[in-house]
Image 1 (cartoon, one colour):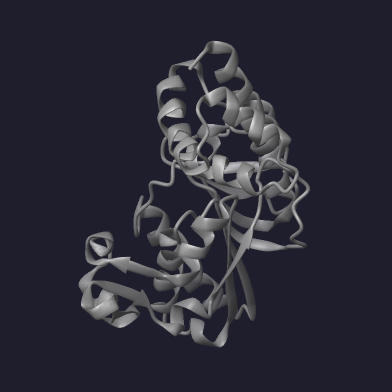
Image 2 (image 1 turned 180 degrees about the vertical axis):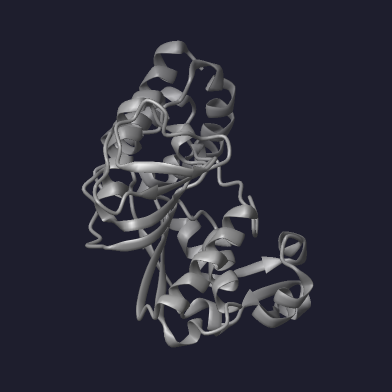
Length: 271
């Protein structure tokens, strides 16, 4: 792939989704673009970027962004966040909370929001609380997979056996396992581009998981995203990012309660 063509792909990814593709990723982009060349019977990366830039429907752009995005995820990934979520839920019960809203941003194929729901469904007393999880992602095809909630056995390795038996049913002749209605009815899936604020949600949201997402954005895009989370998050609410991520260098009203976990100050706080 010629450098000028790569720059056009990188510019498109940044302008449309805030994804910063570094020059060392040229081989990865080339390999993933090759899949669409075959599907569309195009003969070169240059012809594909021309096609993308001329596509008014936005459908091919969505496929391109889906291709270059990394969708690695797993059930109960970074388990300490789910342990903390259970602690928060027990506090909500003690406080007599009636309504709780949570958000799984960049939910990929659904393992994160389903893990959140499994953690919460095991908290005694939470059944009397109206709680729901919003799960969003930019990739439409990935969201459809998440909605289906059907996974091969190997993908369920991170789910403790007791939860696996309770929350997943055999499907596809036993080759797959599908999330039961008790999980699905707690989660609402929606397409959302995190690089295009303001977001349509009204809030307030009590917990936001936006993990292993900030690493794909440059600092200005991170700042816009974090400001939107701050706007939507209830005072005292939790904001979890990936273990390798930080809010360093951003002016926020968040205070770190432990590495990768932040709480929005009750009184608005200070920068």
